Amino acid sequence: MKLFTLFLFIFSLNLHAEQTGMKLVALTEIVSHPSLELAKKGVLQQLKAQGFIEGKNLKIVEDNAQGNVSNANLIAKKFVGMKPDLIISISTPSTVAIKHAAKGTSIPIVFVSVSDPVAAKLVNNLSEKNSQITGAMATDSSMVKEIQGFMKSLLPKMKTLGIIYNSAETNSAKALSDLKASLDPSFKLVEVSVPSSNLVPDAVRSLVKKVDAIYIPLDNTVVSALPKLIQIANGNRIPTFSNDPEHVVMGAFASYGYSQFAVGQTAGLMAAKILKGEKVENLKISVPTNVDVSINRKTAELFKQSIPAKYNNMRVNAVSVVSGTSRP
Image 1: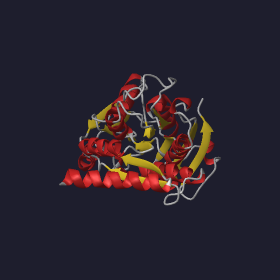
Image 2: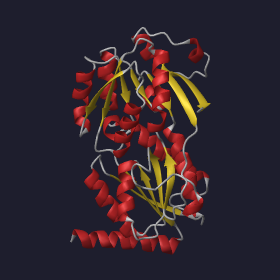
Image 3: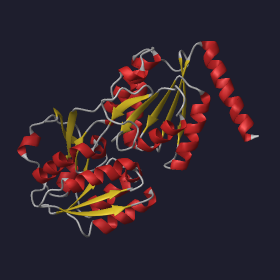
Image 4: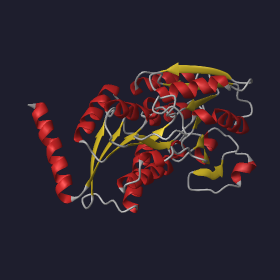
């Protein structure tokens, strides 16, 4: 009965889209957390800016895997069965699921906020012309040297760095591997792997006794528990560093990375071009080039941590010292 109901649902969606001339877009994400929600907001805003209005010429079907890879696989199969005009996948796990489910079809895929498409085996290399999949990266693994330099500029006496990650997330495993390969000789790395977000608080409590700072990678499991992570770290006077400016707004000490909203906008523009008839192979995978540097003033005051003058001269908003700069 459930399969029959699903079949009717898919049939009615496709029939409605055909009768009204609407484009049918399926959007999947691995979990809801502020960073991915900002990325999604960027996608939807850009689609609207390009003339695709939901209810007028666009029908969007969304589903969220609630952090479960098995759910992501089921969603992927369901969406491929709908035969939409386009599938938008937010995060590495959701994109991997979609790619496997869409194998052998011609359904175009635009990914959002994937850290390393090559490591995730989505593409062979970033410059290849792929006829089915493209998207916008939000990488952290390529910036591990730069963020370590940023950490040292703010905490020159730092010796021990902690990292929490989910080893099952390809993006996180790659970021950790790159971090180890380029680890500053003056740093000692303490790592904790967590299989689920409800174990993050315990991981933080174990780290605050051993480290001078905590690095938060672009890990969906960890970021899903970010408010609690920041609360525990700040309560123990342990600075947290991230690659996402939004985390600084939430109370993290500092970040060196890319705006997820901007990444979403880039992907949204790609999606709009495909819906207008552009071939996927003509749209090269986007790698962000502008870095945002953010420091939370209130958190710095909590630690009695001074901010170097070079950061004080940057553009300031209500919470953070922020700069949009080009990577060297």
